[in-house]
Length: 604
Image 1 (spheres, helix red, strand yellow):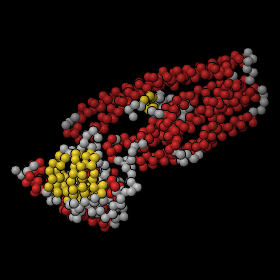
Image 2 (cartoon, helix red, strand yellow; image 1 turned 120 degrees about the vertical axis):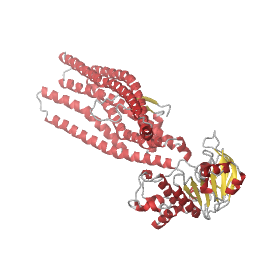
Image 3 (spheres, helix red, strand yellow; image 1 turned 90 degrees about the vertical axis):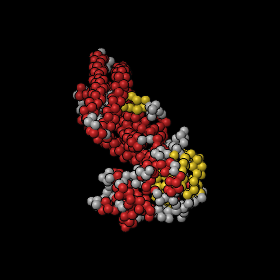
Image 4 (tube, one colour; image 1 turned 120 degrees about the horizontal axis):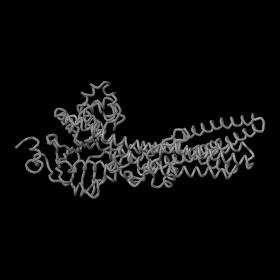
């Protein structure tokens, strides 16, 4: 959010209780009230018991209100020589009740908060999985993960902590102020003066810390970027003997961060000692004034002095805590706004009520005057028109960035055309139910996608009811069975995230086996052999010949030797069909395809 304002809150804690977010950057939301209302509406049906939490918040503040009054009464009774047994028992009962109330408050809020967050996280994830690929083109994956985890966790912290603390402190301030006004309006005025001084002090200190913490975050981002860049490119660093220069660069940025952090923490560290000084001066002032009033006879109850001194101590603390809690609330609401930004995105087009069922598809494909651009300001495909009869093997070739993969993205409806239409078996793709349409295609994309599951489950990803034998047969057809059998547990070997323990070629073989197992009527292979050696490439090529029999198939390849036997070769250049025909026809044409083929094969 480029227009979000950033402030910082100093790491102050006068209560001795650990609070979240001290000394952290505070991001201010664009619309605090509106976002809170929307968050409240979103959690409807999942906040059962919240009323009890508010009730316990009010009861929790009673200890801060009642205990000083009881303490003063005990002192008065002692001064008058009366028994204090009942008062002591009552005070002990208040403290025990306070423990029970706070325990119940935390117990209920833990359950309610996690239940609400569970609902928000499920709602967000459900929304993300239904968004079109165009949305992910505009957002970095790491940034989306941050919204799903960090931002939701910030909301969780607010719901489970900040909300109850704000309620408790609000009740405490109102209750103590009322009691102080009843006991002595003049002494109350002295206490209010100290509160005013605390506000002024906080404003002065945060004016400096805001700038310093912002600079600290900036320097931290620069340092993190250098660390990530250095580690990811360590091979290049070592290859060019740049270790010393990298170390110098790191030291310089680390030193800048260290200096800024020290200044920020020193300034934020001023606040707590100065506040203690103000509180002590206030405490001393009240003690002196109340003593004078007692001597002059304006105060006759000595216990009132003790009561008021305790109230003055407890009255200032919630103001500092509320400032911190409120900043945490703003950060959480800013996170909620980022969550709602995703939830407001337009999902993939829903099926029409009159959507056609796609039963027994043949595989006839036609592109008719198709225009498309990922960005409407830049057109990638321009007036693409062609007919592909069922059962034909079609190869799509051309320079990098010419629009080859874009054709596949449109065919599978990962994106919809900007203009024109694509037909399958005589009907526009948009007229079919999306779930039926996607099942028509067996897809092997250029980027392999494997999951932290067993090899068998990865191959059977599109056919969860597939038998082990059918999985093995798909692996044999693609030549993947050889290395699978060498794995520790064979087909039951659980892969790490993304199959990192496998080579790129082995990962590609598994994705091809996955597509084979779907037994789909239309096969799509986007650079399926780009990451394998020539021996493996030949195995895949032989397997593809079998797989593509009696199926419409689309093959994108840079190695033209793998697509020589295609029924139709489409040469795309600058978003248009530059050449179209069989391998022999295009060679005889002696155009761009022939030039590329001769360059690769070395034929003069």
